[in-house]
Image (cartoon, rainbow over all chains, first blue to last red; front, side):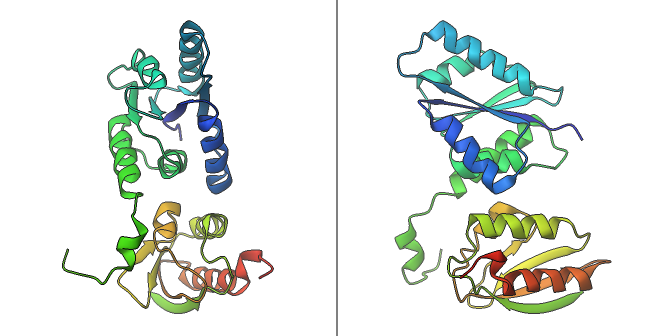
Length: 138
Length: 91
C-alpha cells in the first residue's frame, strides 16, 4: 500500500532527533524524512532542502509537513509548498504526532490524516498533576 | 471472544520500547486485542502504539486482555507470555 509521506521541519536538529526517536518506537519510517534548518542557514538553501524533502517522500498519496512552531522560519518556508490535496501542514510538532504519522496504515486522505495528527498532538499533552488530583465530574 | 489477565512485571512498565514490541506482536494477529486497566476506566487497542502508551501502565498494573477473532487463543497466549517475560528486559 502506498503511504502518505511526511516531512518534519524544525530549527536546529530537533527534526532529525524526533524522527530517530519515532523510528525507535515504530520501526519503519522510510516514508518520513526530516529537514533541520540551521539558525544561520540561507533561506533560499533551506527552501531547496524542504522542496527536495517533500519530493523525496511523495508518491501520489500526498505529503504532510510537520513544523516546530507556528510563525517560525521552518513553518514560513514550508508554507510556500502547500497545495490542496497534495501538501498539508500541521505546526507544533511533538513526538506522538510523528509516531502517529509514521505508524499510519489506514487508507485515509491527506486531510483526514492531517486532522488526526493535529488531534493526536493536542491530546498527548497532559499536566500530570491533574491526573493525580481527585476525580471530579469532568 | 476470550478474556485473560496479566500484570506489568518489568520495572520500567509499559514504556515506549516495550509498547512498541507489544504492538508489533499484536499486529501480527487477526483478532482484535484490547487491554484494559483493572484499577480504573482506561482501555487501549493493543495494535496502536499511542493507544497503548496512553494506558500509562507502570510496574504492577493489572490488565484485562480481551481478544476476539480466529486466532484469539494464540493471541492471548502470546500477549500474556510477552508480559510475563518482561518484554525481554532483565528486570
